[in-house]
Image (cartoon, rainbow, N blue to C red; front, side, top):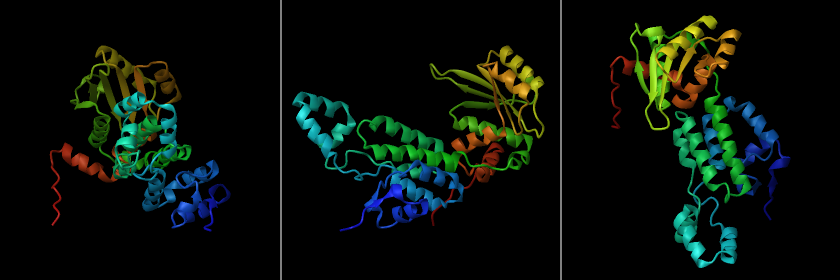
Length: 313
């Protein structure tokens, strides 16, 4: 008889050796971390892991087509408790039931395709997983739900919370810094406009949304500074926001803010402060963790230089 491996009794290294081997089917559980301790130990050193290992682990944790097979338990429950009219209504209105009763394939659609969103669009990948979780939380087994939740932890830790040296921002030209900020707001689905140098109050970017219920006008001021930014700049921005009847003003910098500046912004909902660490976290989320390697392409486009199209020969 083949041995069953209890993941809760293994060390992290032992668990990894088994989950990536042909013994994985005999590991319980094998679609999520077996304990919080093993999960935390793995996440603590996630930036030392290879890209291949990260994606292979996600393949284990994410729902795969045919991975769970038919939901026989749910089918038996339905036979005992639903009449034909109820069953027909459920098949018509719930995609899960339609897949379960009208197709030969799995009741769950696979999720491993989100790996194609990494490393460039981790925020999109997380949003897909969260939406899948909401749609299936009442029918998926507990360990599968744990696996989805822990997949978002892996993606966030690996691709969103990775650290980059501040010198990357400090070495940019002032205009390049503005271009990078504008690209971020574009990726966050804003319509953006770079202002002229003479624009009132030193505003560099106007970012707007026009959808009903989501209308918003943000005035963004970019500060490529090494020094701490104080209250004076916050007061100036607040005045410009009021004069322009904007939704809010954002002061985004490559440094940090004084305690008094943070206090003033906290007391004014129309002001948002984004320091260099928060800025780089947003860049990780919306441009991908390798944004620092691809930002030159952004600058070329801003200069009106189109990149050549790659052709497979």
